[in-house]
Image (cartoon, rainbow, N blue to C red; front, side):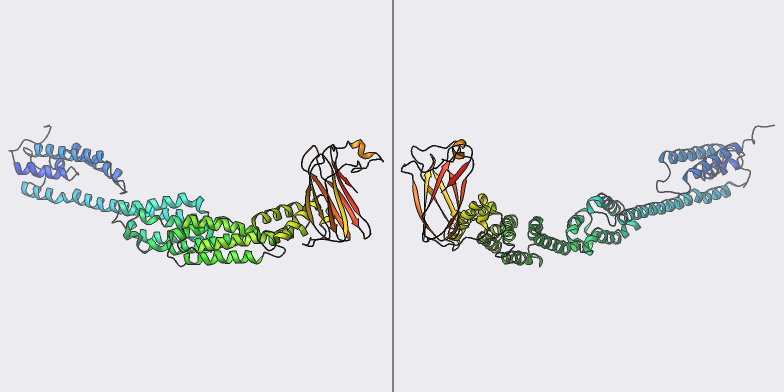
Length: 505
């Protein structure tokens, strides 16, 4: 039996027809030249390609596979042309008809390629739409979370939107990005809609950076969308902090004034600060004087900080700070009175000493000095602080105070009248031992010496004395309570002991 059909005269048309039939990928050129195994090999190669390529996806067919398949078709066409040159066809008998059939069948791979490209393009579109949906879902899943927690997801979603419009501008997903972006803005700024203004500041500030990361046409009117909301949030948050006494209001108002200098919200800042100063001023003079003074002093400092941070072209902030400072200084007197009446004598003394030092010409300065003295006496003799001292002076009872001490002694007294003076040290006097003071014969200021002394004219009633040595080893002040009555002459003696102070009459 012959291995194949007998050779035929060379026919170029037949060779071209067989080559074209093999280019279809179906191996029909081999079928018409009775090469069934080679035809089967073409079918297997085409089947492998179809199994790998279908269904079409966004990644397509690996380039190496396509190149290998194309090379296989070219080899099959060249080999078919070689066989067809001298091999008669099984059917059709005429080469022109086979040639026409080959041309027609070329539409199979060409049409398949076009169909596959369309399918792959649709797969790409679906993949891009899936990315967009995933980004939208990522943003939606962060509803109710704090901005610091959700910020990473927001930035990731924004990166997806940016990639879609930049890398796939003609895709259906890219055309839907503006709608997704509107929902994105709304969800990120959700705290503003809930009137949680302090919480809304951070996400709204972030949203103002979004237009710089996307094409202008994609952002559209959203570019200015956060501005008014952020200005409102900064003002409302600053106002809340101002009312609550939180320091953060300076930052909020400062950011508002610097970021939106011409906004309506910015024009409300100075009136809000003025209102806070006036409210604090109203607290001076009552039971809350100290708290009001503290608030005024705090306002003075923080308004100054705001002026430094945001500027003060019309001087209104400086004026508000000045009013707060003056009112705080003036209110210190009322605060000292409140502290005295509440029994906080140490604070009252400190407050009044500060007031006296800072207000040399104030109308209440003289009485503040008296209150400071009485508060110091009351720290040693609490009963001395039962009444607020007046500016009264003089009286009908003579009280002589002598200094039997080697140190200068400051004498403070309060009662119907209040005052203080200093006696110089007694030359030749000494500090007494504790044992001396316990003896029944102990009598200070009885040595016949020329003791430093001073005579006071005091009213009838109880006067409280405190003696404060200005040096030596004395560790505490001496005190005495004198009940003054008409017809008597009184003597106070200041002396020092080793370890504690004392006084006697």
